Image 1 (cartoon, rainbow, N blue to C red):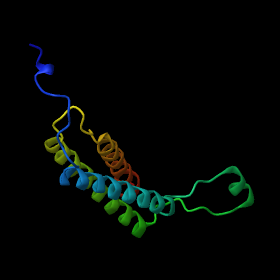
Image 2: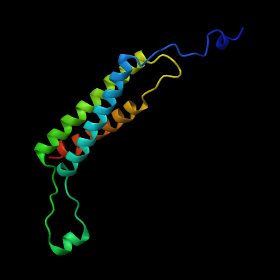
Image 3: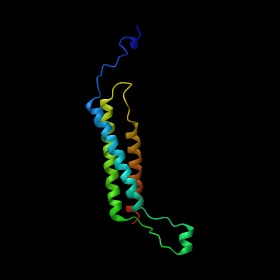
Image 4: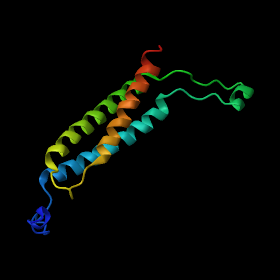
Length: 127
């Protein structure tokens, strides 16, 4: 007898598990913090020097703004740790093949970790 025919195809869950709801909220919070980090990075990062700015003699800031960079660094660490915790939680809570795999946590963690290393190299270690 085929093992797939052993169990009925009916999903017996009546509603979402509390942990699944928590994971969905953590996903929203993580991406919201990431969006805030994007805005903060716009103001913290050095400005680019284009040809027209050099031609007109306009000064551009070529350094990271330290207080904003610190806030950005903290935001990214919080988001990365939130994503990592959510990856671990989803690993233990999603057992069925039809459950959501929450790949967005992996994507968010990879982006935040790469960004943390970029800021550490360019803003802190070059000073």
